[in-house]
Image 1 (cartoon, rainbow, N blue to C red):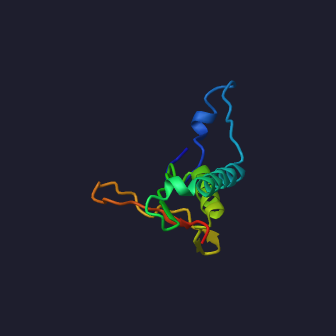
Image 2 (cartoon, rainbow, N blue to C red):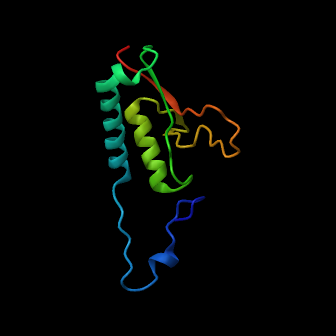
Length: 116
């Protein structure tokens, strides 16, 4: 796919008669991923909350910026974790920071408050 527009590469899809695109429901997959992460955190809060404040900071790897499945997964995970921020009526799927220049010592997408 085109990483800036999310459009499928039709040249690759039409390579020959034996070329197929196999996809999945990215929204449903993202919701499941987010739910699994949230349940894991809730069940293991005593061992992963290193300072005991009930807040877990996290980094969300979002994949290709602009790819339609990356957008859906990012929105779904943020919804499930309760960290979604709406922009123009939709959950924002933009990265918080990419640290492409390596200057950041901390990169955090959001935080989850557990049992609080």
